Image 1: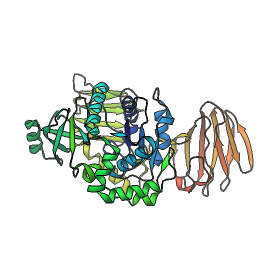
Image 2: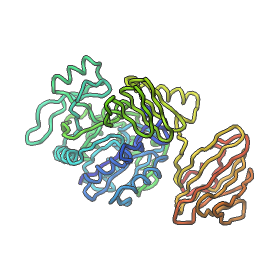
Image 3: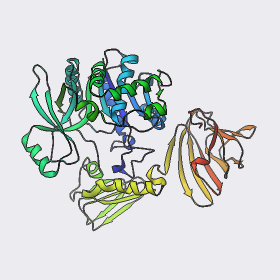
Length: 475
């Protein structure tokens, strides 16, 4: 049984300001409006053939991921089990935990297809054909990786040196894994024809992986088994204990297993592939106009060449410039030279050092119950627009340092303030004093929208004291 495993984590700092830690790269929308995560799920479902697709992701992304999955036609959420990490870790713990779970809970003979959620592949038929070639190798005990034929010398990827062809199979022995090279070395790799990019996608039987791990990285396997044994249950979602999870070595699947395993194969990919690792790579996905410019959103471009402009809300005007990346998300603007777009991660490092919210959250913040958009954030007040999904409810909470006013602009809300519960209709308001227990609920079958005005001397999220919470956020 082929069981795709979607790995969905990482902050994607090189794609800031669109990708942020609270809304990372897998949730980024492509030109067709679908996220990278949703496109990965589509590939996984095609490969699974009606079977299970396992997702390993952070606990904070669980509800957002389920919302994404619900948009996929034919997706049965009951056949999409989740393993939830309490904090970001490396790929070796994630993959070994997935192997343990799949072998015990899905199928003893499961063959895993490991798929990072932030890759873009357009030719699904070619991908599925290669996945089945890899699965055939996995049945013979090979640990298989997918190699991408280089289209140009690239210093940002690791490489695989291919060895002999495997008799009777469509694959080659991995002669060596090679670290990211300098430009001169990359040029020689491409010229030789013996090297492919390491895609970070893998295929192997779960039992084979665990047997190899026992020999080459027993510390990783032992820690993963302990973590799996302490999980909060074996029905989706499976949540891992923070302490047991952090006791696992922080190491990639490449270093821990693939580079040490005795029987590793590579399938040279016949499909297109991009890991969209920078804004330059993102811009290359779109077709350029006669001046080499690519635009998403509204922009006026005057006497400018070879620029990429993306704007979610505002008009952008570019005059007399060239080779720029301009990305406007409404609350942040990135301006970079195309060839230096990788350095945007240094911007994120600065923001994190300054504890700036723009490093992690957008103007619109997603929550399990819906979302909120910050309309104003001043010293003496904060204004949000809240959207609450049908049947969902915010936590029962109070605040020490702020009062709140709720005004319904669309729909009907159920409100609790102190011991009093009542319905709040469109164009009606309610006042919540400091230190007062309150809760907001959507009892209807359509979204409700509210304006929340906060008054006080501090508006941080850590002033939320949760007393009850449907989504397990009580601390």
